[in-house]
Amino acid sequence: MTVKKELIPSRELKNRHILDTSAVNKVLDDPESARIVERLKETEILPTTVAIAEICAEPDATHRRRLLELLKEIGGDKRPLAIPNQLAIRACRAFSRRKDLMLNDGLEEGVAWAVLNNPGIADEEAQAFAIASQNERDDDFRNLYEGARVDFDRIFRSGTDRPGSARELVEIYSRNVPFLWNVVNPIYWRAVGRILRPTQVRELFVTVPHLRLFFMAYAVAAFQRSVQERGYGHRRNPGQYDLWSAAYLPSTECFITDDTRQRRSLRLMAAQGQLTTSVISYSSLRRRLLE
Image (cartoon, rainbow, N blue to C red; front, side, top):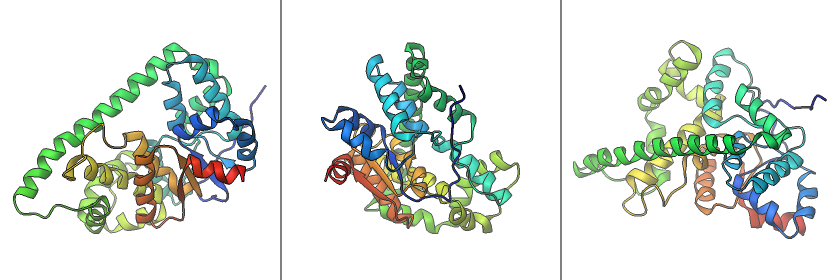
């Protein structure tokens, strides 16, 4: 039997909600889970490849299966949204071709869609692969910013003022078009096969805001892990997947997470990106659904 799947252009936003993995876990464990699920099915719940990857890393096989079944139930026929680094590449291609960014029409989303429809695929071998991939990404993220902290400290010791907040650092970066071009152009070249003109940087970010939010996540991580004087480091701040999820914000009305650090970071980025997206806690969602 062929399972229906829905491909999603980025421009359609009405009534869309995204649940972070932490929120999916809370729904499953909630004593009012059945009522909450029925209410969630009344809206547009978009599953994400990030959530499925994190669920596949869950060590308990029974819990892993139940989470995948729940995500499929509330997501219905929605094929999962692409992992954010793939969205960044497709955003460049969409801009170059003057076409809509499609959020879930790639190979990785196809694999995630297959897992949703057949949770048995997420066996111990798949779990080991998911954990290894997640650890590799986390290590790369950690090493990037631990090295950057040394460089930032050198800059600040030389007399440059240290930004007092992630918001301030984002604003500094956003005003520096040559810096933005140097960051974006390598990805654009890889995706499109030609150079992005510096004069196109702002147009690209306005036309495809997913890319702007994706890079904003790196600026926020730079402040949290490399710039702030207290509370920096790997264990005290949101991880790569948590911050990468900012790339989903332009395509949802509401993002729900039970992770306080992630929620604060995504709220900051939604505001800086001039989005109307709400970023709320699971407890807030629960009150809405059960009132």
